[in-house]
Image 1 (tube, chains in turn blue, purple):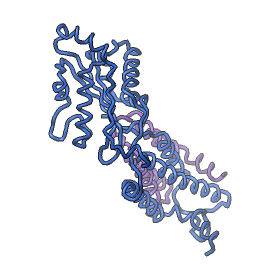
Image 2 (cartoon, helix red, strand yellow):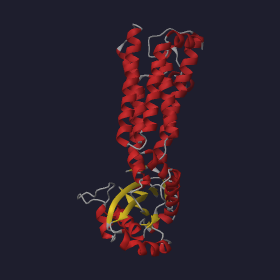
Image 3 (cartoon, one colour):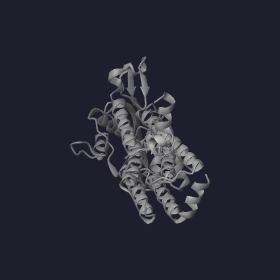
Length: 288
Length: 87
């Protein structure tokens, strides 16, 4: 079979492939699925073969997270939260602990609760809350994701809280370079005794709770690639190929008026177009 | 294209239910974008519903065949695997 004949056989409905492109046969779809899964696994081993660091580069700043949080609170008619240095320190301790012990959860692997860090940072709380985020690239996306989740939104807009602490920390989690955002909320147990201290702290809140725990070599010639971007590009390519083949199939079968016993190409196309739209709209970032 | 339009208009209730299935799947993924577990469940349910739609459609059309079920199944697996890789 010539090269052109092979292309026709693989992509176009023809008598050689029983009037259905060979790539649409279950066996070939199965091969594509295996190659996709294999390439995903291979991508995670990329740093071993090339000077590449898998990671998420972010432009998130603590100041912007505070600003956006207070904007949301103002929109909902809630009091603006004050930055508290003790809470900032508690957030930094929590983020550093997650990187040091390589976990991503409210409670540490040995069951330590987030409130432990409040106490460690000398913040005696009456009410306390925690929002976490990772792998985001923009501040707006972090706050939007929290707002979309009822439990995180409740923390963000709760009128019980008076103080807020933020830490944006870069480091390596599960072998992937990422940025963790830890947002803590609280109200001190004895407000009257603490009031003068809070006023003093508002002046000191220029302390930027931002840390980079990543290695120095990252800033060198090593290229940083987002694992999410790799997966998204592969997904877009794969689904687009199938959308293209199904469009060809619908057009040619309809034009040649071929009668065949097979599944409905239009149904497959509708399903895959929706999958493609979801893939195109998906963004990196996880909240907890 | 005439054949395609003829098939769609002939099976309009079938295709409307298919659009309903994929529409509900999209809505579930958007509304519960914050819940990783729920998004995974919605994705798997979307794939399963697509296969079920194919089986019911061809059964009503009286041309259900094992190879046809496999075609729907593999397209569903493809879509589900792709979405799960991004969740």
